[in-house]
Length: 500
Picture 1 (tube, rainbow, N blue to C red):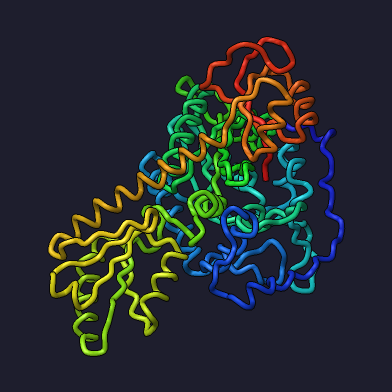
Picture 2: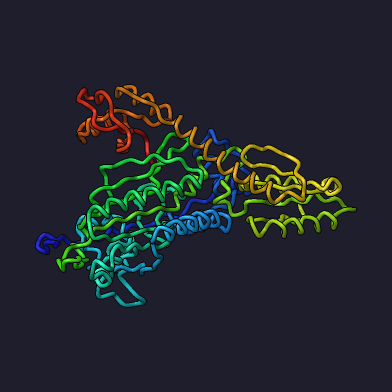
């Protein structure tokens, strides 16, 4: 149990005046729909693309809070639905808990609140009245959930209990905010499980990791799973997933945490086993956020815009009619019939705007729709349509009568090819390094250094200072060989690089 004598008050954040959000850059005002930056200029390209491709709008007048436009939210929504389906199929059940957490609950697990003390948004007033007790906007949900689990769990029959919710968390990010990478309101899914034994909780870690690995692959995002020393506040151990961006920086995407009995003891989450003996539950938690959109944009996009895997694309197919004055209605009727034929199986959009076909091609390439189907008077005569892949630009004529099967086959290939290409690029971003000088050279070249590590954190800290980068973590499934850069025998394979 928590020692109340040692319990420290939660530090209240210093008052800080928010700076107004900067006005959009001049090129954004002059060219509101144009992608002018090249991916080689990664930072400019990324920030411009998420605006012009209708992913987000950053002009909300509170820094670090984003407005998701319909297309951008559609990407996130598709990802979350895929994740929720996998969670449901593996015995997790969806719930919803309040966003407001009383201060006394947040204080129950000391290391947990200490980890979030500088990031908590506090509610101290309601209307014109001061609250009797301050409340926090949820930075994460362990404290509010586990207070209720202490009422729900009584017996071994209540276990395992596996719940999840898709919601927002709020953290006053003190570093420089970056859209979809480091925000103050974070869209995410968090999962919490309770078990009767430590072995069951450990097995659940493998389940969570497998679910996340599958969902990342569906989004076209190769991942490096690493054990980290800087664990989630209140956890006993953590495995975190990292994507490596085109600039060579790693982005932590999600984590799977073994909480042991720390929270269950703090919140009295107890049960009676089959023999009637009382014990505290063993718990895990894992979470994944909007950063998946950032990674999908950054890793798979190109100089023309987004490149979306079919699994997370709001539209999998866009139909573009190629109309002429004398055949306008004929083409439009054929396009509408084609949409009706496909929309039961695929997410299809018919672009019937009164703009040029070229403008439509540009817009949908910018937004990364996996397949474009073109249909014009000559195609109607030949009873064919033109199918264009966004990822490769390949264009083929397909027989209209067989289009449903051909679309499915092509989307399946696109899904696999996008991930395969991303995985190749991911592996090329990891380079073996046998000395700190080698590491520094690798990292300065925009890549991650893979190295042997002795397991001593002091050695890792020396390495960080020597190479001006972060010792990100180490793997459990790779066998260490030879010596660490310090000369001692290696125990793990470690990874060193720049991170966001």
